[in-house]
Picture 1 (cartoon, chains in turn brown, red):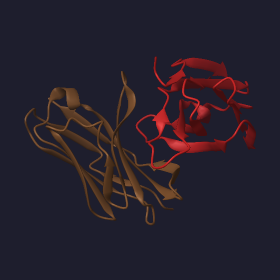
Picture 2 (cartoon, each protein chain N blue to C red):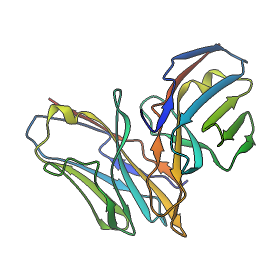
Picture 3 (cartoon, chains in turn cyan, green):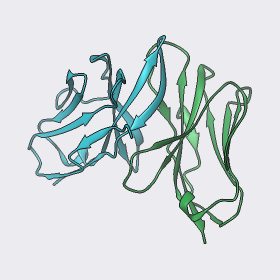
Picture 4 (cartoon, rainbow over the protein chains, first blue to last red):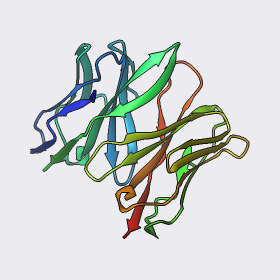
Length: 116
Length: 112
């Protein structure tokens, strides 16, 4: 059963520490998204990649967040330094883009981040 | 005004009831519409995917799109306690590589 895998599931850290979240997209999918979910803001797009190239990272605070795809099976989201306001659930999602159109999006189970 | 609006609920119904969940949107460029279900501490999972106005049925679920009114609905027939979750609508524009826009979600509780 193909699924998006995210690690870690939970992360508790102190303010100022570096946090790295990882995502393994569904094999064959060529588009990867990072979302952040909070009660107040709902799902917010942070960044997305197609064929490993970043297409849009306008939703990320550039001074502290970075997203990369070192290869087709791994996407990373890094926060350095972390702040309490970064506490949220971070979701990775993957999909298949055909003829320029994003099709169905499949989500991982998320990383619950708490920054103390 | 947000691009996609959705009543956050919570919505509580008795088991067996028909549930109606709705979203309105402001941008007529949206062409593809989806409903996701999200259980507590889980990621959203795709329930329905539709293009164009009209109805699409899948088991107990019916998705309805009215592009002229910029209004989409999800109906759940014979609701079950296992349907208790947050339901998010999502939509994308019909152009190249644009991202999905999500509604804030409606929390549904189906009481046994």
